[in-house]
Image (cartoon, rainbow, N blue to C red; front, side, top):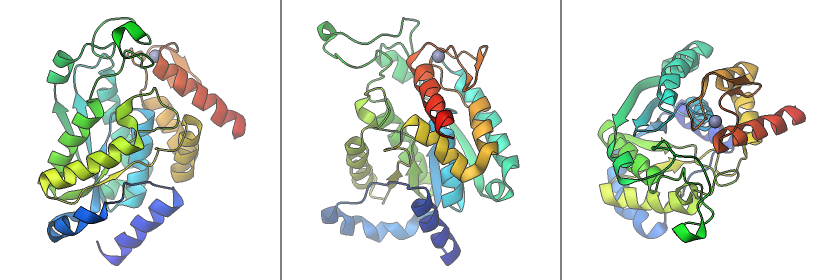
Length: 275
Ligand code: ZN
C-alpha cells in the first residue's frame, strides 16, 4: 500500500465508521510473515446486488485502491438479484470516475449444493414464516439458510487467497437483522481467525454496516455518494426474498410483504423522515 492508498484507506475507515475484526495477539505474529504476499490496498466485496452490499461496495471504492466483487448463485428464489449486480456495477462505473478506475473483476460462483442441503423458504417454494419451538429453531425466520454466510465468506477467502487480496468486505449487520446467527459480530470475528489460520494468510473481514440499522445504511450511502448513489441503490438494488421486480415503491422494487421488503421499507421511511 503506498502512502496515498494508506491515507485513503484510513480516511475511508474513519469517515464512514468502517468496522473490522482485529486480530488476536497470540496468533497474529505467526501469520505476519505471509502478509507481504497479500495486497493491502485491494478488497473483495461480497456483492449480492442488495441494498447492504451495494452500500458496502461504495464504501470499499472510497476506501481501497482496487475493488473486486463476488456473488453467489445458490438456488435462491430471488436469483433476479444477480441480474441487478450487473446493472449496479455498470452504474457504479459511470457514477464516479475514481470508482471506475478502482473497480476490478466481478466473480460469480455457482454453489447449488447449498440449496440441496438446506430446506428453507429462501431456496424452496414455501411460505415465509417464523420457525416454531417444535422445530427446535424458535425465533428464526425459515429464510435462514444454515451456515450461508460462513460458506460465502470461506469461498470469498479462497478466492481472495488466489487473487492476493487481504481485505474482505461483507454487509452483515447485527443491529437491524432477522436474527441470523452468522451475521453476528462475534461470528465474523471468529471466522476471521479461522480463515487466517486455516489458509495461513492474513485476512481482515470488514463489516461497515455491523452497527447500523437500515435507515443509517441509507444515510451512509448519501454520505459516500450523495443523492445520486441513494437513487441508484433505491432503484437498482434488490432485497425482496420473492424476487419481485414488478411492484415499485418509494423504497424501490419488491413484493412489499416479505421480511426483506418490510425491513427495507421501514428503514427508508425512517431515513426519509429524518432527512
Ligand atoms: Zn418482498
